[in-house]
Length: 232
Image (cartoon, rainbow, N blue to C red; front, side, top):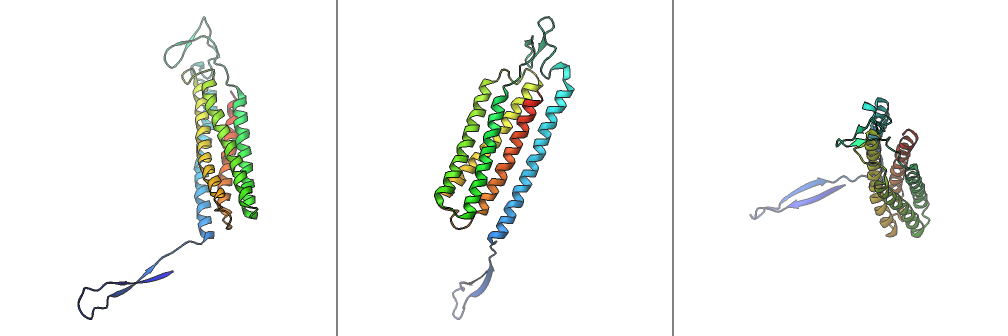
């Protein structure tokens, strides 16, 4: 696209000004979609590295079991251990209830499936109500998972200072909560855009980005849930 502009003269007679050309480049929707998908894949790749490090930390500290303080299996009344503040531990640190992690992971999977439906509805142009309704259900699933994850922080039978298992488990919870919050923030925008009809003109490819991200979030949360509940 070329835009021609005329610069004003200096005020002298006969000065007609100078014509200049400004070249403005605009990406086509296809090019913009390619760039956005590449950026998303780069983000997912970096997040996958972080996930791998989290899982590695869990199994490494679990197998290392420094001073028997993965869960304090050797702590007894006659031979107490000490927590991070020097307080005595006289029993093994209990495991967290697995049901919170399982339900949260299930809600993340439900949200990902609903965003897949959002993409399909937007691609087929089934109507503003169907798209916004499905996006709203996905957002509700995410908000439910966030609420449950926040509640679990107060329902844990341990604190961060009573062993490596406890501190690593709470870190997993924080990671899950952060990912859910990011996806919920994006999901709020998707629901609002769908409500306003921004996907009615064929821009379904933007919902594909959300679906891809939601699927990755569901996978990562399921991995953390499996590790934290199956290998405590």
